[in-house]
Image (cartoon, rainbow, N blue to C red; front, side, top):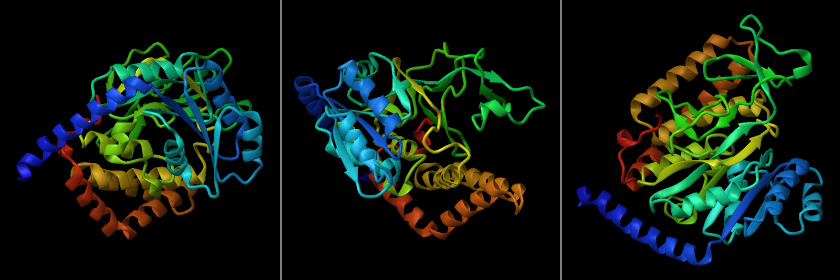
Length: 365
């Protein structure tokens, strides 16, 4: 019976997907979800762009327990949208889940509040998903970094004072800073996971004209369309992650249930990278380190888990006791190890639900 489990599950699921697609073709309803936390200005800009484009049947804005007057501002500025007010900040995962739950649509588009969609963004994602094979669960967009960027000389570790804290590094470690005469660079054409368990944007800081393959491991939660039938099958975002790696974790669950993710280059957004949380904040450093390990324990092969543990330990120890980032990384490691029995139990549950072995999941190109 165990040998038949995978094929039987896939057959049953695909019949369900086809029924959902038939229903979707009749309704063709698409909702866009934007999550806000204390940045009603950014959220209003993003939601207004979607509303003015006119392709979405519904726009749902979730206020994630803001401590300012965001709810009143959003309701006043966006009367055409549904504003969902959460009492507490549960992180991006909880906010996105609240928006998905509130949306009455077969296709749900997620859009970061610090992203500005180009005309046709929603339609491109929706049309790709509805025309795709039944096993395509999500379509991820072409995310372009806002502004222009120039490489910093190798002997400089910081940008000019005028650039502030906006220095970023590409996958090779090269530093980039905002520059009026710089180049337009990509933020993401989807998500991939390396052999150390590190989830990363595919084509991060690649030239804007880079052509990327359609097939990709995961979607970016900042700009992607999700098929409701796929979410019904595997569940929504894991709220225990709070923020960071929640899209990678969901991509793992999709892949292990034989769903696929594709990339749509015509769906374009311009993204103010980490305008809401910051790439050097304590929250980012801690959550990024912790969640990378947690997701590896839940889903990745043991070789990846071990490499992730070694990499995190070395990163923390090398930084030294007085280094803020090193302390946060070691605190993240300690938290994962303290809750290790629970993570191992989750790993077992995921294996029981899956129809595709971990070793057969292709996480990178």
